[in-house]
Image 1 (cartoon, helix red, strand yellow):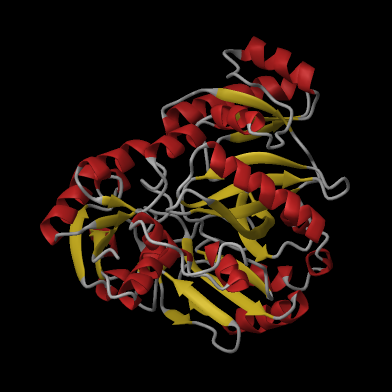
Image 2: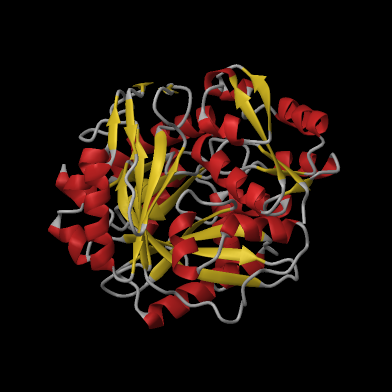
Length: 445
């Protein structure tokens, strides 16, 4: 097993990886920016290294500073968490070229799935269903208009290099397409350094379902069930649950088989997620994208399948066999994750500030993965995620009732936060029924 691990991330995911590393007897090394010096993950690591000022480009995205920290501390491996450099193929190559172990998929797989058009084409060739869309970037507005006419409105205009729900716009007609194309292209050039745009069929009433895969050290790819991710704002997830209330055993078998084919098509190793759009009426699903990293929502899968995914990531990276039987994976129970963000609960706009009060809920089936505690300052430099409230139980109804009590007990004073939104959601009949889709938040607002 790996003996020393540098976590190239911050907040709750850094704490999460550090916790498993220490349980396994691995020396855990944190890196932190000047803005994060007082956060819990810094104190909980066996060793911590300051790598730069608050600006992520000068700290958590600073490859030279991270590698220097690894060298000075004698780190054997690097875990990138999610966000920042986690899906940066060049960083993965640089880590391995430096003689370190990269705890993630290979750089070639990251590259292959990082471009949405290339990923769509690869998946189609592997027999994975894909939504109608362009097989090459729409080179200009005229090409986009022609493609949309062939696909049929409404269409989604997407940044080919985008991710995390960013760089997307919906066009219901040609006039809207002309506006959205320019907007998405400009955003993509600014955010991703690549203005390539694809046009894809847009489904107004659809569910967002994803499959957790794990590429093992022996070359096999296994699927650890699905997660429902349809509670979203601005195409970004707020709630995840497993199993999905929309997925039957027959549909689950098809989803998981397709996800395994997707992983096999790129020789996938380590943890990843195959995201799909699901039409609940027809049972048809379409490949959306592959996230070549650990997902924010991985804890719901850990509970339902009884697997510590960070531990398995480390074992794969070390060339070891999994701790579970790949041929005996089956779901048990139910889990829901609520993303507690520093944002107002109505418009979901960021609300940084000093945390005056922080009281986490406790009780049977309640777990909190937090990045902050009382007295910490939530700064505007990073993602608004404060914590993840994970609630588990035997049935979905039991989990919802436990979640209601946990949300009522979660006290955060200081920065704006979305805890009140979850109290509203958990009473919403559409959500409670399980028959919801990606438009549920907009209908609530």
